[in-house]
Structure formats: C-alpha cells, structure tokens
Length: 66
Image 1 (cartoon, rainbow, N blue to C red):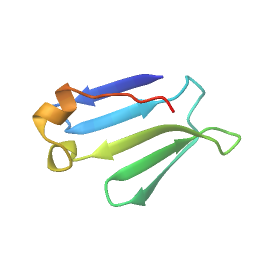
Image 2 (cartoon, rainbow, N blue to C red; image 1 turned 135 degrees about the vertical axis):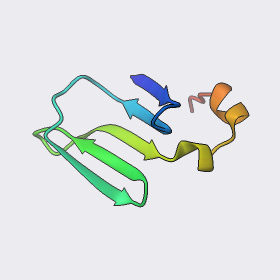
Image 3 (cartoon, helix red, strand yellow; image 1 turned 30 degrees about the vertical axis):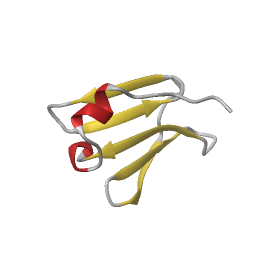
Image 4 (cartoon, rainbow, N blue to C red; image 1 turned 180 degrees about the vertical axis):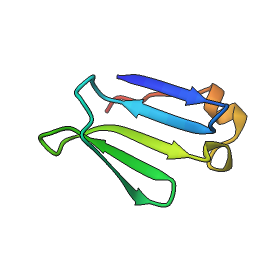
C-alpha cells in the first residue's frame, strides 16, 4: 500500500495496489474511489484534507492492526 499526502493539491491518497485504474467515482463530497477492471477498489482519495484533519494528525498517522 502507498499513502501520498500532497500539500500542493491538498489531497490524501491511499493506493492499495498497482492495478490499472479504469474508473473513478466521487462517492461523497471530496471522497473519490478508484476501481480496476474487476470493479474492485484500488485507491481512495480525500480532497481538501486540510479541512478534515489537522497538520499534526496528518504528520503523526497511526496504523492499527486488529
């Protein structure tokens, strides 16, 4: 998985694998899902991330395995 925080475009992107993206859909305002040819989600993009999380939260992301 690859996580990209782009301060210039104010986006946070989670890419699950390198499968070719064939379609994207904005499922909620500012939340875009990327799909492969099998209709599986391969990426999630959050627009205007600075309005959704503080700079501190973005610089200290924590991952939890359950």
